[in-house]
Length: 222
Image 1 (cartoon, rainbow, N blue to C red):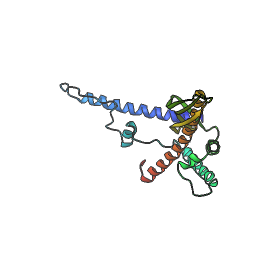
Image 2: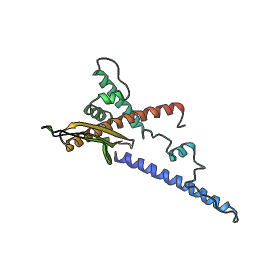
Image 3: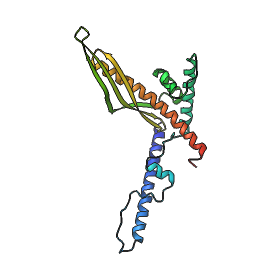
Image 4: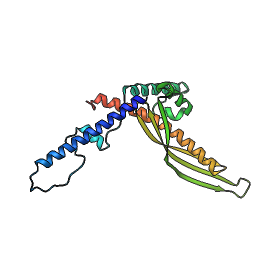
């Protein structure tokens, strides 16, 4: 896993250096060929005039990411089909597809299938703590023995990373209602948000694979 990550990081670093060098070389050529009397106009950096359309769209943030390797393409595909089979075996009526597979599956089942599909040490998830926020808060006051009750909605980003560098990051939401203490409401809502975010990340991986396969058919990467 370390070697895969190292090679991926090295590829991105070398590509970035190549593009920057290409831009600088063109800038020097233009300055050398410009007449001395010509005033230097507005210069844009980096110079994208010689980039191909994919490079321009990536630089502008218009291209969706894709699975980082053939391994992740196969692993994500396996993950989705195992989850689909497991979820629909539990269904008495109908057939679940899409995000319904994730909302109806308990998180322990999703993690078990992820371990089978990717390998238990080939994926990891983490909470992006500085994105945590209280979306809604309400305190109920009573004059009797009930005292106080608390409602709280919490949101936080979860990041899911596969061993080859494929990454998904999504916001999860959790709700706690009628809790006897503020601390309990907060911990319950945060735990729900973490679970919701992880499920959303796994679903984002599946959506990423679907987009990639559609673009392959369309010849997008040719």
